[in-house]
Length: 239
Image (cartoon, rainbow, N blue to C red; front, side, top):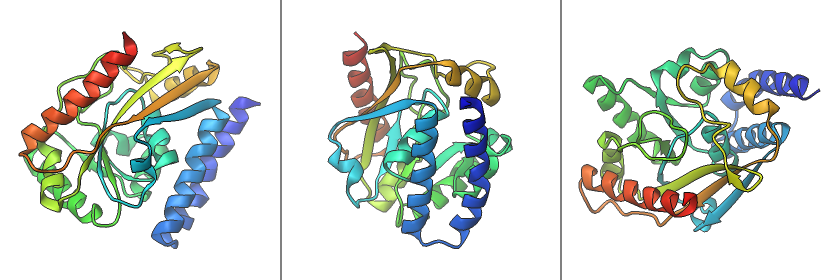
């Protein structure tokens, strides 16, 4: 029954994407938020927001920077604060999910191409006028126990648009203990990941909202400050 619910809900995204095309920005956000909340509910994953949560629920636009563990990170953040995401170009080729990402305004990037980074920055700056934009500065996902060095390029969008950075620390727990069961790493396929997560119970994701950072520094300093805030929070809660 759970498998059927997941399949039907994933397929529901097709008509919803066409509805998004003719909707206002507010309506688009509600549609995205509804679909993501429902998917998490079907997977029986609870979301708990901690820290300075008022920054997630206000009307300000931020450059959101989060650690990256799973494709579920996007669903979790969208369920709380609908945003535009920057994702690796590989995501565009994912079955259905890649199409959905394109339809919902995801900015795709090849990090090894300077020209691609410049194009992404231009798009980010345009989007930050109306929507929050979320990046995963590690550039890839981990098992959640550690933090990879942050790539600084995309932090330039915060400086150019005068939008503050909102650091978010994500961690997944199972029975109140750290869990890597949702981690999307190594050669795991999206289908394999969905099957694995479907089999798990009592998964909870903690969304720790940290102090916003004003763009008073250069991009490398901003990346470093953001990294250190998330690293410290992760270290405190996994020790």
